[in-house]
Image (cartoon, rainbow, N blue to C red; front, side):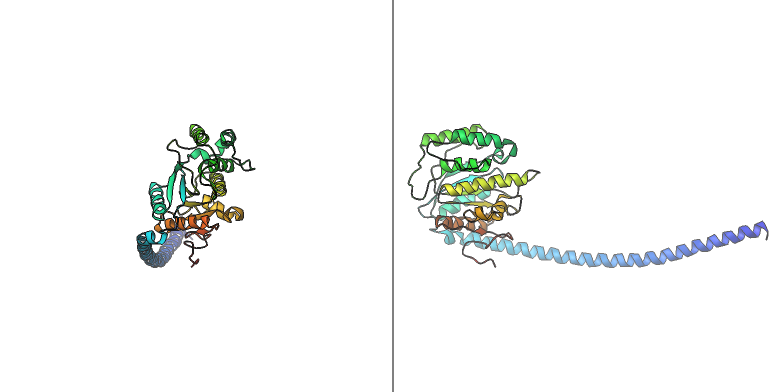
Length: 312
């Protein structure tokens, strides 16, 4: 066999292989492209269906919320007649929620005695030692702190003695000047915002936003939950209400619901940004005044949307 014949043979073999690869890859590519195109069309159809469903659900939610807002004054009328309520808000509590809750308490016949605005320092683990020290030093005469080393419980005990009265009391057992000194000391320490001192109340609403963020989110949520539990013990009762998401493990509402002891006495509401959530907050206050507690909202760990309604 001549060298020329050898070269021609090898070249022919490689040309045949190349031609086979081209033909094979082209066929496979066409099949793959056809399959991908079919999947794409199917996914686009599913996306369109989901978008349509979401749009319908959002429209239904707006309609339901509008209806709840329209009937809310009639639903809550007289529920808090003769009762005094103090609002305790966290830095992430939305202004619209705060205004709406105050208005609804008034529509229910209750009297808002004022608002105490907490700062981020209250739930900051790095400020826990300072909080414990201040709670001990600022405690008014005749008041007692809970037997706990937790900063949230101690701050809640101090605030409870300053803001709330027992059901049978007509006025605070703590002298007004000592209450003023305690709140002023907390303001100087950076734990509350300076402002008008709330008058003594029987019930408290702790208003917060959604879940806490960051690596210390769970600790912050637990601190606020324990603070709220002490406010609940100080007067006729308390409700902690937060936005959607607050019922999760990094939200104070969720921490309370996960603790059978706290949730047996402290009422919780998630979804306070909705009219239904605000109605639930007022009705939960009425339940607290009657010695009962519950978990309300749309979260999976809520027992019903509002007091008196079934979970369905």
